[in-house]
Each structure stands twice: as structure tokens, then as C-alpha cells.
Image (tube, rainbow, N blue to C red; front, side, top):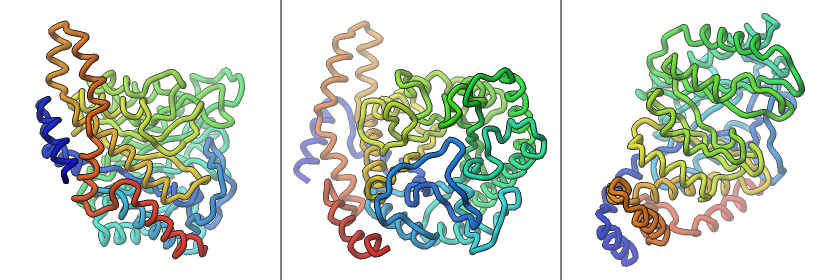
Length: 411
């Protein structure tokens, strides 16, 4: 409490009200990704090997093996993360109960138990179609010249939108559905224009039906595993499509060239696109989906959102899946890191720094931006944890160790 009171006074000297910031942080809702708990395996009876640009590495013991264990792990992670957060489901995580259900046959019936579970635990749901790890995934799905395969994935994605809309209706809040397909070519190809015409055709067909209680977002990428030479759904393609068709654009921090800044995309696309979806992970040399930490790219991303006055136009999801460490620990570390980056962004005296910049006093801009790095923001985050009745600081480590001893270590 003493540390927080000191921090409160210090930030007030720059015109920053920490109580207002804490209220804003309380309204900052992450969409936790279910696939961290089981390394993107899902619950399909006919599930095969992971493929289609998806790879999870590591074999740390204790991964969730079924829907009950996955839900248990998610609730444990949520109990160690301050605030109220959503849950993001992939279609392959349906409650299939031993029944073989192909992806063009899926309905909301297989997600009814998720809807009820979410209501019971005061959790809003988001959703994703799943085009990977399937016999018909191949290199091309929605852009496949084979009309039978293309129609299969169009029908799958249409049904996913139906499910997302039903989720939104049940929770009284729009369900955000992300569409990402791995489509591309491993080596030299000459049919780029054909594949992109087919992808646009598929998207037009998928989005033809109005779904008032869900929001569509589309996600581009530089390349996929095994598809390094060409990506059909590139950033240029999806940015243009989203702007023209009033869709949300997903910025995945691992889907750019290593020297490219995802943060710079925020102010570039917001004049043309109403809302953004973030998938926050940590690329190490490539789209490796390491656990989010408080690194410079992540901090800059959240700072740009606040500086653009876009808090109500951006949705926040996590997208990492590290099977090499304790999976609950990964959830907690990554979620808290994202919160801390947002907190630091909110604590920046933006109006004061902006005034100096517009007055041409560049050294003051640099001075204040640097000074903010050493301000006692940690005391404000500790206070946030305290008010949300979750462990402060590294105290969550003991909680996770106890959970390993009692639960995951016995699997």
C-alpha cells in the first residue's frame, strides 16, 4: 500500500491519475487461447498428426487430455490472472463425446456445453475456424482449385460463423471469430493470381450471410511451415479485403518479417478499418509462438493503441503454445506480461509528451519517454493484483507448483 501511494503521487506529478488507469485496466479483457493447455490437439475423434502450418514443440508433462482437464486448467490459470477475461476456442475443441464429426458437419450442438460452462464461470467466448491438421488441409484450403476441397472448407467456415453467432446470442455480447488459413506454396509457383481469386471468392461466399452477434476478423501471414515461398492470404490481401468489406483485421505479432514492426500497423490501418483484433505472442526468429513477455515489440504495440486513442476499437487475444514448460505458467506469464504492457501504456503522460512534440521540443519528448521506463509502474500492477484477489508478484509460482502436485503431475 505504501509503494502504491508513492507511485500514485509520482505519476500525479505528470498529470496521470493512477485510479483512472486502474479502472481502465480492469476493463482490459484478454481472450485466452484454449490451445495452450493441450498443444493444439483438440478433441476430434479422427484427429491426425499436426499439419497445415501448425507446430507445437516440447513434451512437458501434464497437458490436458480431454475437455474436462482443459477446462480445469483454464480456470486455474484465470484464478491467477487479475481481471475478467474471455476464452478463445478453435473449432476442433468441440464437445464431440466420442462421435466422429467432420468439419463440414459441425453445428452449435457440439459447443452447447461450452456455452453453458462459460455462462457458469462468467466468461465470454470467442471462436476460430480450423483449417489445419485434417486430411483435406494440404497446402490449399479456401483457395484450392479442387472445387470439392474448396467447397468443404467454405462449408466448414460458414458453420463456424453460425456457431460464433449462437455464442454471441447466448452471452449477449458479440463473439469474435478469427479466420486464418495456411494456404500457400512450398516452392516456386505461377498461379498466385488464381489462388487469390479463389480465396476472395470463398470469403465472399462465407460472409454472404449476415450474423449480427458475431464479428468477423481475417488474419494474414508472411509464410507458414512447409509453405515458405508464397502465402495466398498475405497482409496486403487481407488488409485490402477488410477495408473494402468492413471486416476486422487481425494483427498477429508473429506473422511479420523479423525487422517489421506490428505496432506501426495500428495507426496505419485504423483510418480505414473500424476495429482490430490482436494475437499477441513472441516470435523468436520466426513465427515460433513463444510465451508473451514484456519485450520492446509488445510494449510498443500497446503504447501505439493508447496513443492512437483506440482502446475501444481493438480486441486483445493471446496466441502462443509452448509445450516445453508448465502450461499453466505459460498462461499466467503471458497474460500478466500483456497486462503490464497495457498498464505502462496507460500510465504514459501522453498529452504532456504530445504537447512537447508538437511544440518542437524533441529532447523533452525523448526525456519523458525514457523517464517513464523507470517510474514505479510495478507498484500500480501489484495494487491491481491485490484488488483482484490474485497472487502479487511471483507468489503465483507456489500456486502453480501446488497445482502440479495435486492435479497435472498425476496425469
